[in-house]
Length: 405
Image (tube, rainbow, N blue to C red):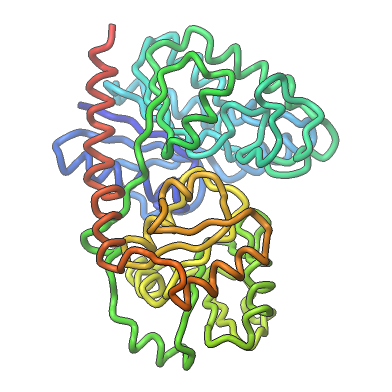
Protein backbone atom coordinates (compact mmCIF):
# COMPACT_ATOMS: atom_id res chain seq x y z
CA UNK A 1 0.00 0.00 0.00
CA UNK A 2 0.88 3.66 -0.34
CA UNK A 3 0.33 5.53 2.93
CA UNK A 4 0.65 9.27 3.42
CA UNK A 5 1.07 10.61 6.95
CA UNK A 6 0.45 14.24 7.93
CA UNK A 7 1.50 15.68 11.29
CA UNK A 8 2.68 18.94 12.76
CA UNK A 9 6.08 17.35 13.59
CA UNK A 10 8.43 14.67 12.33
CA UNK A 11 11.07 13.01 14.52
CA UNK A 12 10.38 15.74 17.08
CA UNK A 13 8.01 15.59 20.05
CA UNK A 14 6.07 12.47 20.98
CA UNK A 15 3.76 12.54 17.93
CA UNK A 16 6.62 13.26 15.54
CA UNK A 17 8.55 10.27 16.85
CA UNK A 18 5.47 8.05 16.53
CA UNK A 19 5.08 9.21 12.92
CA UNK A 20 8.71 8.37 12.15
CA UNK A 21 8.54 4.98 13.88
CA UNK A 22 5.36 4.14 11.98
CA UNK A 23 6.94 5.23 8.71
CA UNK A 24 10.00 3.02 9.22
CA UNK A 25 7.89 0.09 10.42
CA UNK A 26 5.61 0.30 7.39
CA UNK A 27 8.54 0.59 4.99
CA UNK A 28 10.16 -2.47 6.58
CA UNK A 29 7.03 -4.40 5.63
CA UNK A 30 7.20 -3.25 2.03
CA UNK A 31 4.76 -0.36 2.09
CA UNK A 32 5.49 3.02 0.49
CA UNK A 33 5.20 5.98 2.86
CA UNK A 34 5.28 9.74 2.38
CA UNK A 35 5.24 12.09 5.38
CA UNK A 36 4.24 15.74 5.16
CA UNK A 37 4.93 17.66 8.35
CA UNK A 38 4.55 21.25 9.40
CA UNK A 39 7.19 22.47 11.79
CA UNK A 40 10.61 22.08 13.38
CA UNK A 41 13.85 21.01 11.81
CA UNK A 42 14.13 17.27 11.39
CA UNK A 43 16.59 14.78 9.98
CA UNK A 44 14.98 15.16 6.58
CA UNK A 45 14.72 12.25 4.20
CA UNK A 46 13.09 12.04 0.78
CA UNK A 47 9.99 10.51 2.38
CA UNK A 48 9.56 13.30 4.95
CA UNK A 49 8.78 16.76 3.60
CA UNK A 50 8.28 19.96 5.55
CA UNK A 51 5.39 21.84 3.97
CA UNK A 52 5.06 24.98 6.12
CA UNK A 53 7.51 27.84 5.61
CA UNK A 54 8.58 29.43 8.88
CA UNK A 55 7.11 32.82 8.01
CA UNK A 56 3.68 31.25 7.43
CA UNK A 57 3.77 29.45 10.78
CA UNK A 58 4.50 32.76 12.49
CA UNK A 59 1.75 34.47 10.48
CA UNK A 60 -0.75 31.75 11.40
CA UNK A 61 0.14 32.07 15.10
CA UNK A 62 -0.15 35.86 14.96
CA UNK A 63 -3.52 35.73 13.20
CA UNK A 64 -4.78 33.26 15.80
CA UNK A 65 -3.80 35.63 18.59
CA UNK A 66 -5.45 38.59 16.85
CA UNK A 67 -8.65 36.97 15.60
CA UNK A 68 -9.30 34.02 17.91
CA UNK A 69 -9.52 31.67 14.91
CA UNK A 70 -7.01 28.85 14.53
CA UNK A 71 -6.55 26.26 11.82
CA UNK A 72 -8.12 28.60 9.23
CA UNK A 73 -4.93 30.02 7.74
CA UNK A 74 -1.68 28.68 6.11
CA UNK A 75 -2.79 28.69 2.44
CA UNK A 76 0.72 27.99 1.12
CA UNK A 77 1.31 24.88 3.26
CA UNK A 78 -2.24 23.63 2.66
CA UNK A 79 -1.86 23.94 -1.09
CA UNK A 80 1.51 22.18 -1.00
CA UNK A 81 0.07 19.34 1.09
CA UNK A 82 -2.78 18.78 -1.38
CA UNK A 83 -0.32 18.86 -4.28
CA UNK A 84 1.74 16.14 -2.62
CA UNK A 85 -1.39 14.04 -2.11
CA UNK A 86 -2.29 14.47 -5.79
CA UNK A 87 1.20 13.44 -6.90
CA UNK A 88 1.66 10.55 -4.44
CA UNK A 89 -1.84 9.09 -4.90
CA UNK A 90 -1.99 7.30 -1.54
CA UNK A 91 -4.25 4.36 -0.80
CA UNK A 92 -4.73 5.75 2.72
CA UNK A 93 -4.13 9.16 4.27
CA UNK A 94 -3.13 8.92 7.93
CA UNK A 95 -3.70 12.17 9.81
CA UNK A 96 -2.16 12.94 13.19
CA UNK A 97 -2.05 16.40 14.82
CA UNK A 98 -3.37 19.14 12.53
CA UNK A 99 -3.07 22.00 14.99
CA UNK A 100 0.17 23.90 15.53
CA UNK A 101 -0.27 26.82 13.11
CA UNK A 102 0.78 24.92 10.01
CA UNK A 103 -2.28 24.00 7.92
CA UNK A 104 -5.89 24.88 7.17
CA UNK A 105 -7.37 21.61 8.34
CA UNK A 106 -10.89 22.43 7.09
CA UNK A 107 -9.69 22.90 3.50
CA UNK A 108 -7.66 19.68 3.75
CA UNK A 109 -10.58 17.65 5.14
CA UNK A 110 -13.06 18.98 2.55
CA UNK A 111 -10.57 17.94 -0.15
CA UNK A 112 -10.21 14.44 1.29
CA UNK A 113 -13.98 14.07 1.58
CA UNK A 114 -14.52 15.26 -1.98
CA UNK A 115 -11.97 12.75 -3.27
CA UNK A 116 -13.46 9.94 -1.18
CA UNK A 117 -10.04 9.01 0.21
CA UNK A 118 -9.80 6.51 3.07
CA UNK A 119 -8.58 8.39 6.16
CA UNK A 120 -7.21 7.05 9.41
CA UNK A 121 -7.00 9.86 11.95
CA UNK A 122 -5.06 9.38 15.18
CA UNK A 123 -6.21 11.76 17.89
CA UNK A 124 -3.21 12.37 20.14
CA UNK A 125 -5.09 15.04 22.08
CA UNK A 126 -8.60 16.52 22.35
CA UNK A 127 -8.27 19.34 19.82
CA UNK A 128 -10.57 17.94 17.14
CA UNK A 129 -13.66 17.62 19.31
CA UNK A 130 -13.26 20.79 21.38
CA UNK A 131 -13.50 24.41 20.29
CA UNK A 132 -9.72 24.72 20.42
CA UNK A 133 -8.27 22.98 23.47
CA UNK A 134 -5.79 20.15 23.21
CA UNK A 135 -6.52 19.28 26.85
CA UNK A 136 -9.89 20.33 28.21
CA UNK A 137 -9.05 19.24 31.78
CA UNK A 138 -12.20 19.59 33.90
CA UNK A 139 -14.13 21.71 31.40
CA UNK A 140 -16.96 19.86 29.62
CA UNK A 141 -18.33 22.65 27.42
CA UNK A 142 -17.16 20.66 24.38
CA UNK A 143 -19.97 18.17 25.04
CA UNK A 144 -22.45 20.86 24.04
CA UNK A 145 -21.49 24.10 22.33
CA UNK A 146 -18.20 25.50 23.74
CA UNK A 147 -17.89 29.26 24.13
CA UNK A 148 -16.93 31.31 27.18
CA UNK A 149 -13.70 29.32 27.13
CA UNK A 150 -11.71 29.22 30.38
CA UNK A 151 -8.54 28.59 28.37
CA UNK A 152 -8.98 31.25 25.70
CA UNK A 153 -5.55 32.73 26.46
CA UNK A 154 -3.84 29.32 26.52
CA UNK A 155 -2.47 27.55 23.44
CA UNK A 156 -3.63 28.14 20.79
CA UNK A 157 -3.96 31.53 22.41
CA UNK A 158 -6.29 34.39 21.52
CA UNK A 159 -5.58 37.83 22.93
CA UNK A 160 -9.00 39.34 22.33
CA UNK A 161 -11.73 37.08 20.97
CA UNK A 162 -13.31 33.80 22.04
CA UNK A 163 -14.21 31.93 18.85
CA UNK A 164 -14.47 28.48 20.44
CA UNK A 165 -18.23 28.21 19.85
CA UNK A 166 -17.86 29.07 16.15
CA UNK A 167 -14.87 26.73 15.72
CA UNK A 168 -16.72 23.82 17.31
CA UNK A 169 -19.61 24.43 14.88
CA UNK A 170 -17.09 24.40 12.03
CA UNK A 171 -15.81 21.04 13.18
CA UNK A 172 -19.31 19.60 13.39
CA UNK A 173 -19.90 20.62 9.79
CA UNK A 174 -16.48 19.38 8.71
CA UNK A 175 -17.12 15.87 10.06
CA UNK A 176 -20.56 15.64 8.45
CA UNK A 177 -20.62 13.03 5.66
CA UNK A 178 -17.02 12.11 6.45
CA UNK A 179 -17.69 8.42 5.93
CA UNK A 180 -14.38 6.81 4.92
CA UNK A 181 -12.88 7.72 8.27
CA UNK A 182 -11.51 5.68 11.16
CA UNK A 183 -10.61 7.59 14.31
CA UNK A 184 -7.90 6.01 16.44
CA UNK A 185 -7.23 6.98 20.04
CA UNK A 186 -4.03 5.92 21.87
CA UNK A 187 -6.04 4.88 24.94
CA UNK A 188 -9.48 3.64 25.89
CA UNK A 189 -9.74 6.70 28.13
CA UNK A 190 -9.44 9.06 25.16
CA UNK A 191 -11.68 6.89 22.98
CA UNK A 192 -14.41 7.16 25.62
CA UNK A 193 -14.02 10.95 25.57
CA UNK A 194 -14.38 10.99 21.78
CA UNK A 195 -17.58 8.96 22.09
CA UNK A 196 -19.02 11.66 24.35
CA UNK A 197 -18.29 14.36 21.77
CA UNK A 198 -19.67 15.55 18.44
CA UNK A 199 -17.96 12.50 16.92
CA UNK A 200 -20.00 9.88 18.81
CA UNK A 201 -21.39 8.43 15.56
CA UNK A 202 -17.97 7.83 14.02
CA UNK A 203 -15.99 4.60 13.88
CA UNK A 204 -13.57 4.83 16.81
CA UNK A 205 -10.82 2.40 17.78
CA UNK A 206 -7.82 2.15 20.10
CA UNK A 207 -4.18 1.50 19.23
CA UNK A 208 -1.59 2.07 21.94
CA UNK A 209 1.43 4.15 20.98
CA UNK A 210 4.48 2.03 20.28
CA UNK A 211 7.99 2.30 21.71
CA UNK A 212 11.24 0.49 20.98
CA UNK A 213 11.08 -2.23 23.63
CA UNK A 214 13.69 -4.37 21.92
CA UNK A 215 16.70 -2.13 21.46
CA UNK A 216 16.20 1.10 23.40
CA UNK A 217 13.78 1.04 26.31
CA UNK A 218 15.10 -1.95 28.21
CA UNK A 219 16.51 -2.23 31.75
CA UNK A 220 19.98 -0.67 31.96
CA UNK A 221 22.80 -0.93 34.52
CA UNK A 222 22.82 2.20 36.67
CA UNK A 223 25.89 1.96 38.92
CA UNK A 224 27.95 4.33 36.75
CA UNK A 225 25.08 6.82 36.48
CA UNK A 226 24.56 6.80 40.26
CA UNK A 227 28.24 7.58 40.71
CA UNK A 228 28.20 10.27 38.02
CA UNK A 229 25.23 12.02 39.66
CA UNK A 230 26.66 11.62 43.15
CA UNK A 231 23.62 9.79 44.49
CA UNK A 232 24.24 8.38 47.96
CA UNK A 233 20.66 7.72 49.08
CA UNK A 234 19.13 4.27 49.10
CA UNK A 235 16.13 5.26 47.01
CA UNK A 236 15.64 7.25 43.82
CA UNK A 237 12.49 8.73 42.25
CA UNK A 238 12.74 9.77 38.60
CA UNK A 239 10.54 12.13 36.61
CA UNK A 240 11.06 12.79 32.91
CA UNK A 241 9.13 15.03 30.54
CA UNK A 242 9.81 17.66 27.91
CA UNK A 243 9.17 21.00 29.62
CA UNK A 244 8.74 19.30 32.99
CA UNK A 245 8.09 22.58 34.79
CA UNK A 246 5.09 23.46 32.62
CA UNK A 247 1.61 23.61 34.14
CA UNK A 248 0.54 20.42 32.35
CA UNK A 249 3.59 18.34 33.31
CA UNK A 250 3.53 19.56 36.92
CA UNK A 251 7.17 19.92 37.92
CA UNK A 252 6.10 22.25 40.73
CA UNK A 253 4.52 19.28 42.51
CA UNK A 254 7.82 17.39 42.44
CA UNK A 255 9.64 20.26 44.12
CA UNK A 256 6.94 20.49 46.80
CA UNK A 257 7.16 16.74 47.34
CA UNK A 258 10.95 16.97 47.57
CA UNK A 259 10.60 19.48 50.41
CA UNK A 260 8.42 16.99 52.28
CA UNK A 261 10.90 14.14 51.75
CA UNK A 262 14.05 16.00 52.72
CA UNK A 263 14.53 13.83 55.84
CA UNK A 264 13.94 10.58 53.96
CA UNK A 265 16.59 8.46 52.29
CA UNK A 266 15.55 9.39 48.75
CA UNK A 267 16.83 11.49 45.85
CA UNK A 268 14.45 12.96 43.27
CA UNK A 269 15.87 13.18 39.73
CA UNK A 270 14.08 15.57 37.37
CA UNK A 271 14.89 15.40 33.64
CA UNK A 272 13.46 18.03 31.30
CA UNK A 273 13.88 21.32 33.18
CA UNK A 274 14.72 24.25 30.90
CA UNK A 275 16.64 26.17 33.57
CA UNK A 276 17.98 23.53 36.00
CA UNK A 277 20.24 26.05 37.71
CA UNK A 278 17.24 27.79 39.32
CA UNK A 279 16.36 24.67 41.35
CA UNK A 280 18.42 24.13 44.47
CA UNK A 281 16.53 21.59 46.59
CA UNK A 282 19.14 19.54 48.51
CA UNK A 283 17.57 16.15 47.74
CA UNK A 284 16.87 16.92 44.07
CA UNK A 285 18.99 16.54 40.94
CA UNK A 286 17.71 18.64 38.06
CA UNK A 287 18.74 18.15 34.42
CA UNK A 288 17.73 19.63 31.05
CA UNK A 289 15.92 17.66 28.40
CA UNK A 290 17.86 14.68 27.06
CA UNK A 291 17.52 13.85 23.38
CA UNK A 292 19.40 10.53 23.48
CA UNK A 293 16.91 7.69 24.02
CA UNK A 294 19.60 5.29 25.23
CA UNK A 295 20.53 7.84 27.87
CA UNK A 296 16.87 8.23 28.82
CA UNK A 297 16.61 4.47 29.32
CA UNK A 298 19.38 4.70 31.93
CA UNK A 299 17.44 7.34 33.85
CA UNK A 300 14.23 5.34 33.71
CA UNK A 301 16.16 2.33 35.03
CA UNK A 302 17.72 4.43 37.78
CA UNK A 303 14.47 4.95 39.67
CA UNK A 304 12.86 2.76 42.28
CA UNK A 305 9.73 4.37 40.88
CA UNK A 306 8.82 6.83 38.16
CA UNK A 307 6.98 9.92 39.43
CA UNK A 308 4.18 11.27 37.20
CA UNK A 309 2.73 14.68 38.10
CA UNK A 310 0.95 15.57 34.85
CA UNK A 311 -2.41 17.31 34.90
CA UNK A 312 -3.76 15.25 31.99
CA UNK A 313 -2.35 12.75 29.50
CA UNK A 314 -4.12 11.03 26.61
CA UNK A 315 -1.60 8.16 26.71
CA UNK A 316 1.75 8.83 28.45
CA UNK A 317 4.77 7.60 26.57
CA UNK A 318 6.94 8.19 29.63
CA UNK A 319 4.89 5.67 31.62
CA UNK A 320 5.24 3.08 28.88
CA UNK A 321 8.98 3.76 28.52
CA UNK A 322 9.52 3.56 32.28
CA UNK A 323 7.70 0.23 32.56
CA UNK A 324 9.75 -1.12 29.67
CA UNK A 325 12.86 -0.26 31.68
CA UNK A 326 11.47 -2.16 34.67
CA UNK A 327 10.33 0.82 36.73
CA UNK A 328 6.71 1.08 37.99
CA UNK A 329 4.79 4.36 38.26
CA UNK A 330 3.54 6.50 41.15
CA UNK A 331 1.67 9.72 40.46
CA UNK A 332 -1.48 11.70 40.00
CA UNK A 333 -4.51 10.30 38.22
CA UNK A 334 -4.12 12.12 34.92
CA UNK A 335 -6.55 10.22 32.69
CA UNK A 336 -4.94 7.58 30.48
CA UNK A 337 -1.84 6.75 32.61
CA UNK A 338 -3.99 4.64 34.94
CA UNK A 339 -4.71 2.51 31.88
CA UNK A 340 -1.09 2.41 30.71
CA UNK A 341 0.09 1.38 34.20
CA UNK A 342 -2.76 -0.59 35.83
CA UNK A 343 -2.69 -1.78 39.47
CA UNK A 344 0.54 -3.57 40.24
CA UNK A 345 2.38 -1.54 37.62
CA UNK A 346 1.20 1.87 38.80
CA UNK A 347 -0.33 3.62 41.78
CA UNK A 348 -2.25 6.86 41.27
CA UNK A 349 -3.79 9.37 43.66
CA UNK A 350 -6.04 12.41 43.33
CA UNK A 351 -4.52 15.14 41.19
CA UNK A 352 -2.83 17.82 43.30
CA UNK A 353 -3.22 15.95 46.59
CA UNK A 354 0.33 16.08 47.97
CA UNK A 355 -0.62 14.29 51.19
CA UNK A 356 -1.81 11.29 49.20
CA UNK A 357 1.20 11.43 46.88
CA UNK A 358 3.66 11.57 49.77
CA UNK A 359 1.92 8.68 51.52
CA UNK A 360 1.96 6.60 48.32
CA UNK A 361 5.68 7.26 47.78
CA UNK A 362 6.63 6.35 51.36
CA UNK A 363 4.42 3.25 51.37
CA UNK A 364 6.01 2.13 48.11
CA UNK A 365 9.60 2.82 49.19
CA UNK A 366 9.07 0.93 52.45
CA UNK A 367 7.39 -1.96 50.62
CA UNK A 368 4.04 -1.50 52.34
CA UNK A 369 2.46 -1.66 48.89
CA UNK A 370 3.18 -4.53 46.53
CA UNK A 371 4.23 -3.78 42.95
CA UNK A 372 5.20 -6.08 40.12
CA UNK A 373 8.90 -6.86 39.83
CA UNK A 374 11.16 -5.11 37.34
CA UNK A 375 11.17 -8.07 34.91
CA UNK A 376 7.37 -8.30 35.13
CA UNK A 377 7.06 -4.59 34.27
CA UNK A 378 9.37 -5.09 31.30
CA UNK A 379 7.43 -8.13 30.05
CA UNK A 380 4.16 -6.26 30.39
CA UNK A 381 5.44 -3.27 28.39
CA UNK A 382 6.93 -5.57 25.76
CA UNK A 383 3.55 -7.20 25.21
CA UNK A 384 1.48 -4.01 25.25
CA UNK A 385 3.54 -1.19 23.78
CA UNK A 386 5.99 -2.58 21.23
CA UNK A 387 6.47 -0.65 17.98
CA UNK A 388 5.91 -3.76 15.91
CA UNK A 389 2.51 -4.31 17.50
CA UNK A 390 1.54 -0.70 16.78
CA UNK A 391 2.60 -0.96 13.14
CA UNK A 392 0.71 -4.21 12.59
CA UNK A 393 -2.42 -2.78 14.21
CA UNK A 394 -2.37 0.22 11.88
CA UNK A 395 -1.84 -1.98 8.83
CA UNK A 396 -4.98 -3.90 9.79
CA UNK A 397 -6.91 -0.63 10.04
CA UNK A 398 -5.62 0.55 6.66
CA UNK A 399 -6.61 -2.71 4.99
CA UNK A 400 -10.08 -2.70 6.51
CA UNK A 401 -10.71 0.91 5.52
CA UNK A 402 -9.48 0.47 1.95
CA UNK A 403 -11.87 -2.47 1.50
CA UNK A 404 -14.80 -0.61 3.06
CA UNK A 405 -17.48 0.30 0.54
